[in-house]
Image (cartoon, rainbow, N blue to C red; front, side, top):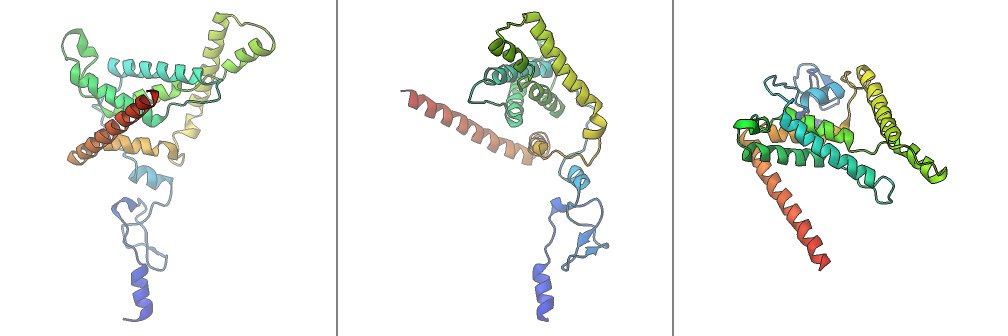
Length: 247
């Protein structure tokens, strides 16, 4: 075997299972496209959407449950109040998507486990807590876990012009400003959401966590068990550390 051939063999890398491409193209040792191979690299946004993110839709799952609305409204109130309280403070506190996903999953599974499915309580526990319910809760809570920019108008009037706005007027101002923003976002769905080229990398970890929690069978259960143990260790570690410093 000649030296160039040996070097070409060493430089040739075997693509992994996650580097499958929908274009049915791969690259040889010289960097040229090999049309005969069915494996390749993720070359564009469409490959990422179809290979990294799960695109399977189970039509039997129902996200519109009272349980999802109950948890979503609670986390929305928590995130909105927390963001508004710390909006005018030097230390800004934000509620992340991963935190909302973790808390909503724990609350949903707890309600599924401990609430009986009989009588009026069956509306709070209609069945197993599913992926669509969790995603619905995260979307609702993350949209509310931000401070309304309309509060700056009210704050400027009170601080610099000594004008105390009416409470009813303030509430309707915040409602109108928030709904105006959501309305513009809804009209721009055809540009910002529906095209497959519009990829938002910030939500990829959240989608990967959803796939790990609700898909995969026994492998998913093992990952969930490890995740639960690490989460419990971090929680009790921080709790004991903060408690020891107080004393």
